[in-house]
Image 1 (cartoon, rainbow, N blue to C red):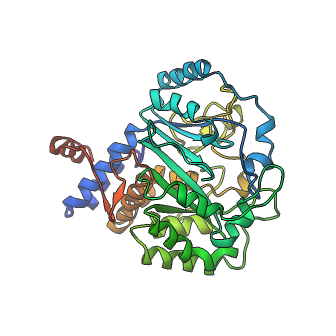
Image 2: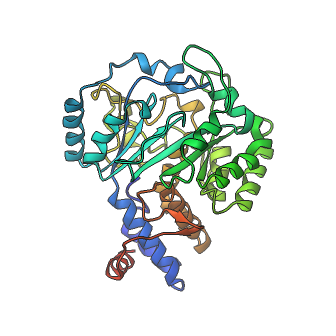
Length: 379
């Protein structure tokens, strides 16, 4: 989240590329302006979780043991107010499992303009008081594979129908985006999983399942077949799958048209973490003001996920990499259109965003004509 497309001469090039396409120019202006208005950070809300998903980086790397969570709501309120004073207006809440502590979510809702949570779906976040809280619901692999990978209690006991439980909890819930982590083992489950999400009145983005702690978790001889099926299902269900073809290819392969995703270019690192002093000097963009905080409200984590970059393919980090690299899409009009679609699809994930899709269309709610013209003038 944050600045995109870079310097003024690059923006002028964008205007030139779209000089004969006023509708596209307007879309570019809208999404750029909105991106500049968001300053986000990530917060571990609790170290507790009601599941032990196979390969979960939080427990594989003992994040639950490295900090002592703050339970006092007044202390949390002071922390959130300090974050707002630092310039942050958007919070992504992860865990552990955030729905175990809705009273802590409420503290962020009171102070931040925008709040999103990442949940395993086992418990429903109440609607009252959280009407504009985006709920990202995780799915691993799809179909029966989801139970195999996620339906595991903390003591090791397995159960069934976790995905169906999540669907029941969030049926026709406009706050929800399912984050469907694709797996080569689950290639045959993709379409049925997407159809169930669609029939449930929800939408989804694609992620890529990284089994932290396993050997070479991203390597698979089935990658090409997985990618082909993911793209086919997306084409069959364009109103349900928010992810664009370019994003899906980058997510599955790790490659964009100019380079490979990794630590040296990942923008979702904590800018106040001391390990990044050299990274911050290499010229690759980062998210302005972004930090990831442990549940003790003091420890700044390495990045938005585990800090183990070799086996990371986090959907939000990859998305952010593509968005902050807007200058890489200024070669042709078609390239810039690809970036516009990427940006719109990114913001469409969030129920609090004016780019949230309804019936396959981007909803730009509450935007007066004067605002639109101001955005276009700045494009």
